[in-house]
Image (cartoon, rainbow, N blue to C red):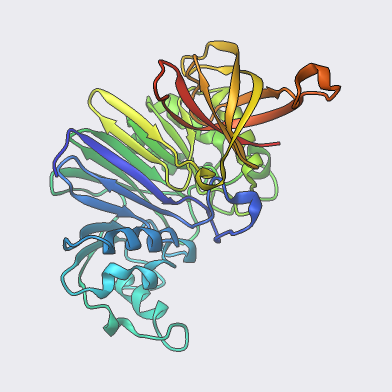
Length: 387
């Protein structure tokens, strides 16, 4: 159904390999896959990592035929490994148009050959003939510009081993730029990326490594850092920067630290989170992050003092009562509205208060949810504890 806004949904945000360990559950462990829906409902799928499987489950749950334009940045395993598990490809009523470049290693029909190789015996139990959905393949080069159902698409080459494309999508509601797997250092490609990102409402950029890693033992691996993303955002006039392609060895706490560092230099920075949805409109911008501990909460009654910063950067401190608590976090009502993914200091009174002789509990937490509180003018804030 047509709307006045475009939405960008994150189904996979991890780089190199999927993760399933407890240290990465909050930001997510699936490899790259984004879904961009233009105001007229046209669907674009950006990369086909393991996050594509979950998107496929949602799409397969509808009665409508699925139509999508799928843009593949490059052919490394973490960006294509979800294709055989994308269930809409196995239904004849669905139609998909794939876009990517001709690889010098694969030659003509590169993307089609990737399909065939992934599903060849003995690597997969069925071959390509099992996919009954309609498929069309278009090869594009860096520097190309073309229209897809009213959205202007521009491409550019990125600095990554064996090649990688960045994409700019200019929709009637705003501009989204997707530039994963790029390493700074090539003057021409650095300049092209800044031109691609110019004035974007949302700039999704590779931030796999820290600046220190990028300057030493990760140099030449084809990835970037939060610092380079901030530089591009400032120079190109980007409105919102999303740090993406998190390293498989980066824990949630490590990504929290990366986000804090980036926000110290550029206010509108977000860390890509599985399930996160951005809304881009001519007069609006919104961020929704899933409540990862929804089913684990229990009623409680602890007095707490919470300090942090509002979305406008104003420091606040207020007392409240935690009435919804889990092992991982809490849901509290606040008079102030903190920024999503910002850090809060939480001081929780011990049961029985100061007379009990027990010391209060000091915790740090990350804001993962903001919504109007029920029956009050306050804000309901979901917090995930980070220590």
